[in-house]
Length: 112
Length: 112
Image (cartoon, rainbow over all chains, first blue to last red; front, side, top):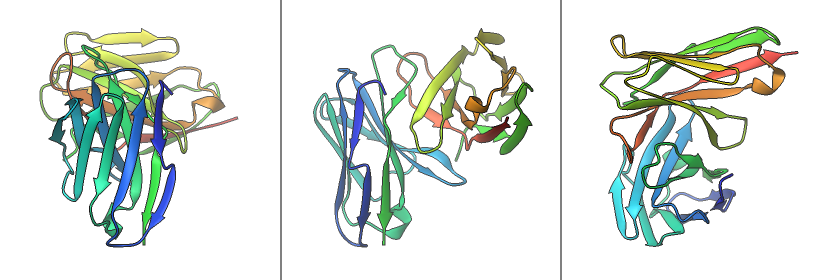
């Protein structure tokens, strides 16, 4: 899986609690992405990063924040989780001048 | 909103048959990519076709692109049970680094 890990792999939390998902890569790739996957919606981009401390919003960024303090780590935070954020979250990476993306194994998040 | 839309949503065939999936998109693109997702796993890149290409092959995969109709098709020849997965098209607007916009996917079931 192209040297990408996600943690935790499964999480159950309650509405209103903060949640942080971690994506870690060993490929030294510049670009990192967070997607969510929901039935009937495919994959939708939440946030992405084009370098350390450089991030931008995707299609469904409301309720999410990200941080990237090191090349290898990209954190996704749900400040106050809601049931609508129950989903499978995927991290992906790509290198300079590389048009394809490599995906991590995903994190299943259930917000009760 | 989704840029790519796959058709059909689900496809069931027998081993040895060919499987064809279609993708339509809305705006001009630089390239279109196809990904596969096995149940419970991350996406895996299959093939990329650029806007100036009409057809591309990779093993048992054949991809076509018709920019005038804003559509692409993925053909898997001589399908195997191991091809059972969901298939997604993704579009990129720019060359080099670009975010991808994914469709909702086609679920392919290949029965022995």
